[in-house]
Image (tube, rainbow, N blue to C red; front, side, top):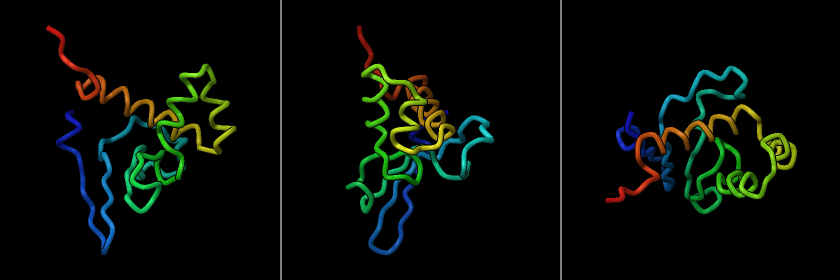
Length: 106
């Protein structure tokens, strides 16, 4: 499934919210499985991609893991639900699988 086909622009008065509307894997532990794992709202965190409806930037998760910390430590530090973190990581993996995060080398 290509990510671009599922990019949804939701317009509300004076607000534009962009979400990647791709079904996430079955994960009954997510607090709100209808909420996209990664969302962008210009009125929240200046449009920074965040984890679900939180104000926690996705890059915070990536940097945290890159520095050798665990998902459990991230969940404890940021108070994000572990199911939401799993859904974000799955979404990043899907983007890689679909070729959105890689450049062709010849």
